[in-house]
Length: 162
Image 1: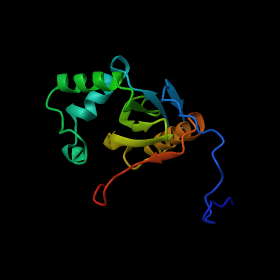
Image 2: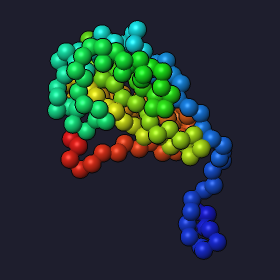
Image 3: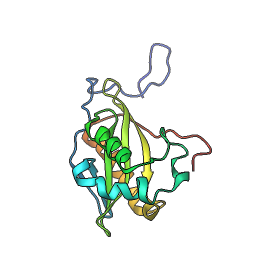
Image 4: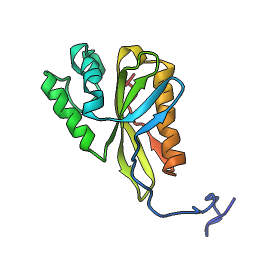
């Protein structure tokens, strides 16, 4: 293990210290789900169901916005998501039902430090605490570490965020 000038272990030097790339994907395909870049044309109807029509109000407790009060508010939000590059938004498509049953984003994307944060996670009840939700996280983590060659993937929450 390399030592610094104070004789402390510091780990190996980075082979490539140039800034990383920004996320830019169409599809990450897994066994139980696919993760797709969120688009209004492709995903609005499915997302409307768990964002508005059958929303679980308590799922919004730790979100940055309150639950949506209209279909138009959902559409506007998703249009903003689609255009955003930081955060970069994904839709989670369950392979059994064929429906989009979750959304999340890579946010606080810092190419200089090759770090990202996972956030704005909303999952329909059908995929909460399932292999689909776990695999969706895995697919994005794999993309971040192996595709973008980032060094840090953070998912911040507090001790009460269940």
